Image (cartoon, rainbow, N blue to C red; front, top):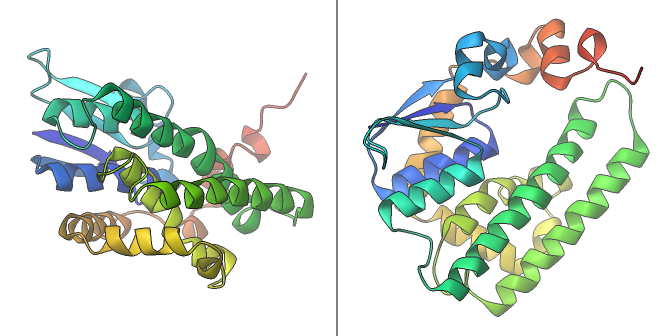
Length: 239
């Protein structure tokens, strides 16, 4: 049995997708990020970096429980545990891993900053929004080009690279307007193909259930918002 410590964020959606696609038995423990639960001592013991997702695999490869945090590391662990969604051929494997890293190092952090400055910054910041819109578009351009060369990001088959990227692409029309779908037709079709998979429907239902049990950002206390966002009394400014 795998325990998934989860919120309803895109990085957690990835892990639900993998667990459902791989048919692994798991239970979900909701973590209320906006109530400050990632700062609790018990949670920091399983992830000192204080973020979800985290998994604890009671039947890990070592024979005892294995704890893994960081969504990319979790995806690789689950793929290697099951022998699924990560090619064994060396070239195809690294094709998959490199596009996984594009999401981990590029799309996720960049789009996350765009969302922060658009929705949560205390004052408008046109420079930040312009910068992160531009950087997001650069990554989207690369993904669109890739899907012109192969049906899936890793190559010929659906993989953990697609699972990692899908939750970040899915809400683009809400963030940038519906016209963005016209700019990226291959990505739009790719999202539709992933959305049609039965495991995706199960994963999104599971994420929605977690969301109903946690605090939306707009309902968090001002102190918890400052703590999560690292601002106000929780800002660590240069000496």
